[in-house]
Image (cartoon, rainbow, N blue to C red; front, side, top):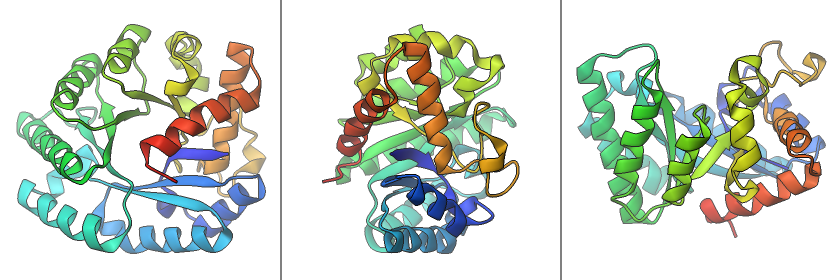
Length: 268
């Protein structure tokens, strides 16, 4: 069992969360740092997961909603320091475009500038890119913008927390990209994602939680370590939902997606 996208260092009780995941059979966790102010907590989670026998793939980026607190030069300096010296990074991310809470044009330009640089950086170092795209009425256009950027670089790309249509998913598949599916797929407000999980090949789907966010609606709340906080164990309920809809075994869903995660993050 694995979780392709989690922020365990943001959980209230990261040690308990990791222990629960390990007891349930978790073996691979992709922990994502998207705010460089959290680097100390991030590194502690990496160390703790290793002590439990979990393999943790560190991913480092700057969340597009947080670029307002940075600049392109500061981002470059942090990338050069953290990615090369601090941790054995497996991918750049999450980076991307986010206009959900703030559609300021100057902020968007900075997001795009940092996105372009992130692809350049990843390409130069042979890393993959994990994308965060979120909008309010402009999601499709933002995804297409990210696709256009990805086309210019020979890197593997994964659209984390995909919430678009099947037609949009096919455009991602056309460039060799992967689709991240999490607890959102279980929400009644996201029925359009059923079409996506029924038609996108299993070996192009990543299972994720985005912990501590996006608790699957089919996950028993008594399993949560902290009320209203998702955790990597929740990935089982994302996988179960997909397996039920596709009428295949849970093992088939997990194993098909797992092989691609190993390849994407270059895990031997």
